[in-house]
Amino acid sequence: MSNKHIACLVILFFAVLIIQGVIMIRTRATEMRGNAEIARRSVMEAKANINNQRAALDNLKLKSAALLGYLDAWEPYLAAVSTPESGELYINTLIKKNNLLLLSQRFDVMPNKLELPTASASTPKSTKAVTIPQMVRANLIIEDDFIKTINWLGQIETDLPTARVSNLDLIRGQSGNDLKMNLIFDVPLAKPAITPSPDK
Image 1: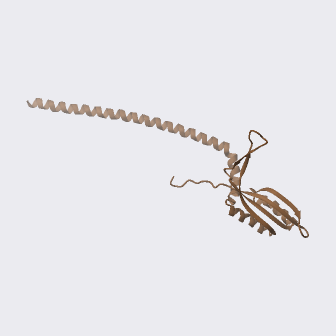
Image 2 (image 1 turned 90 degrees about the vertical axis):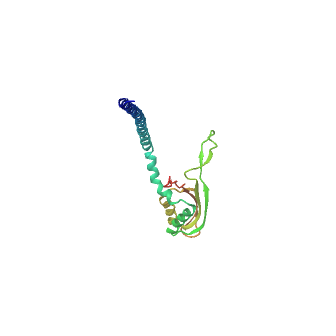
């Protein structure tokens, strides 16, 4: 075989290698263009999804603005009494702050039940509340000066606005201007909010 033949074979070999290389590069380029197109479509879909989610969030914020404002106004009062012990302590503090004579006290933790209307309106159905599952029920007997006792009862609405009076009996006291008050009122214990852990 002459040198010319060998040179032709070498050139042919290199030409085949070049052609294979060009085909591989074109195949990869086509594949990359396809992947880029898929990625571009994914980005467009993600942007559209984000815009939809933002619109939904803005709509929810708009619809719940009044409710969130109401919650913000009441949250400090609900947070003030979060356990049965803090409820008892808070009520005792309110009594001692006004120097009232406390004859008797009893505290019970009660489930908070909501009355929901059923098919028959005359027999409402009870269900346990989720946000405020329990209440501290304070049973108090106070006997002290009429004006001081009535003013304290009126002050309860300011000091403990979440409380609900469920029973109130006012009787003349044993001496002078005294008033005996049998009072039962409930203080809600709000369920604490679950905060996500930082590792999640």
